[in-house]
Length: 270
Image (cartoon, rainbow, N blue to C red):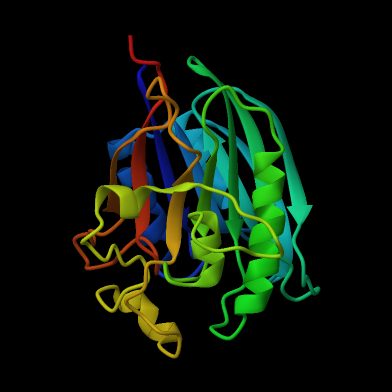
């Protein structure tokens, strides 16, 4: 195994048509055969809706960890990480500006892969267009959490950041902006491999976004960030592309977001 395949998707909870959407999500994951999957807006409602990530992981034969973020519909909405390899540890950390009705977290996990230990984090930042300052505080806290974890391989930081590439909170991750006296560097996988393509994940082309049409569409707000590539080639972004973009025979797309699938080099070059 010289590459690790990671997928990120905002699952869109239990929004209808749920059975068709979950079938589409499962079919795409079976086609992609990822090593690691990060999911946002995962929901569970006791007696009504089984934990969506656990259901998918059970069918796919993957390990899963879930962390509730905020109450939803008599249950919880949260984040999940699925892995084909053992999950050695995981933790959920509350992010700044949390309120009971909108609690934002970062979920981290350390995965024991054949190429070495891998630290990964997923998050789902506040969504309002005018909440840039909140996202800045959230991104700094989330980045610090994943950066603190030991990892044999370059770390992964993925999810729904609810901010376009030119936002200061995203530029901070790319090493192009200072926040609170801090500078960091992560590879923006899409910008690295497709600098001339928009890569919209929240798009007019997806009819499910009509329900939230007041949020500016045609934006790239879902990301795969990879720690700096090492001299031996580990951490090189070999490929990244949109996924969950094809409707089923009824015309139903799996989510209101398009997802991302990336292949990352994890074996040192000889």
